[in-house]
Length: 116
Length: 117
Image (cartoon, rainbow over all chains, first blue to last red; front, side):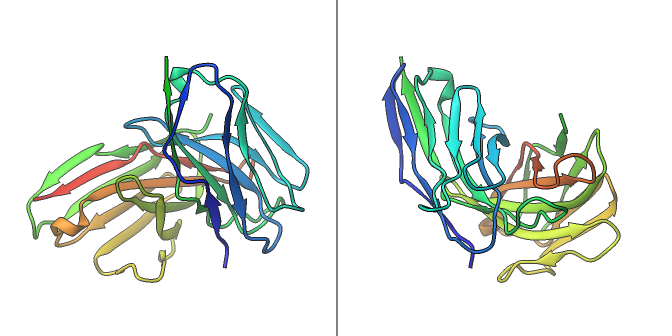
């Protein structure tokens, strides 16, 4: 079945460091891929998404590229800030585009802590 | 952007009582709403999918008689935890998919923290 695997955390970085959080997915169907962020005490917010191979999603300095050949969707940011401290979830749905959406399958989440 | 609210944001109840959690799409009509459960420091587990006007579809291992879901309108879904026990304590999150705009996107509520004593 569908699954998503994220690198285990927690990840602790100093401010302005480079961030990579790895995410791989099972290559069934033609999924859309997502990164969600959950700040302390809040619900999930969509950070970025990509709906087909080679698409790059970007938002707030974060980027992720849909790599079909490696079934990956790694999250990167060139210079993290303290305010980026949160839990990050990679997710996929069963289908791509069109009118189909389906259930999201989430990775286990990666806790990021950024120190000043 | 699309906003989903949940009420209450937290609730404490005694063992054996029932608790109702509401999920509302505030500025759009939700074709489908999803209910998730999140344990501390763990990922979200999908409990059920509910479509307006029809019975919810529960994931394997989720007791439908314990977690009652009603999706009475395009803007409201409710989750009732019946005869709650301490092991039901968790963070419950709903999400909604809009009829309009991006078909792939789900919008999440802020979650409800349930503590059963």
